[in-house]
Length: 319
Image 1 (tube, rainbow, N blue to C red):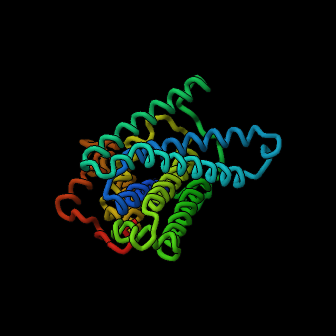
Image 2: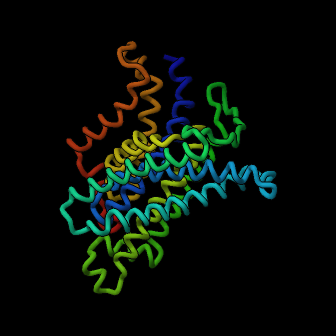
Image 3: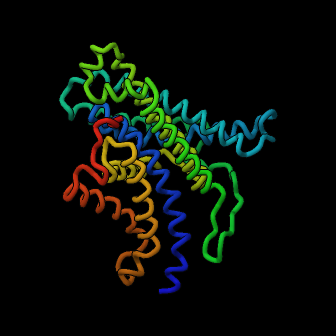
């Protein structure tokens, strides 16, 4: 038992890192659902697109004579900013082309459109990367390789700290934006009642596009941080991760910003603990590869016993 307790700090640290990645992606789901009550299943591919945008920007910056010798933090910030911009524009474009014409259609129609967009983005990235590099499994440049030795059983990579700190900063900024700015209040008004918001002079279509842009930008940033942390991306990397992020959004309370954060972090912790201890607790009946099943067991349990999620749905913050 003492051996298992010694492992716990490292397991928790790994789970927190993964959980904050889930939380950033979950915010994209919860924001779109809060405004349109619609699950944008193409969001996982926007996350993937952001990861590829980040690796291409990083490679271009490192090869540049002007920025090649720049500090790693500068390169990372520029890559995240570029990925956020490109992913945000992609998200807004997807809303304009694939979702807006179907806004008044039966609920199933835009859902099918979202699935179609998801497959299209997967194959488009695979095609472009295959033609450009003759490969679509792309290793990320090694960044922030330093490791902090915080104890006999806890080695914390600096890049993990950067992932966690970046996630907290972006989520805090989003919360302040939604609750403290005029644009944030306009988005919340559209989430509350589109017809009334329109009568009050709010550009409903513009606010919906802005919501997609912000959610997609957070997904793009998460893609870069995921690539830096785990070193490899491919066109299908968003599929399982996107399902888990959706699970996190439902777990915390779909449509609720703090709920998306909480659900993502808890899901990351559960998955990390399951990976480390599942084989021990079940005497090797279930091994670490069954950790992915935990996410969907949690989703089923939440839907059965508390469909509104841990924090429920706070109407005033449905963004």
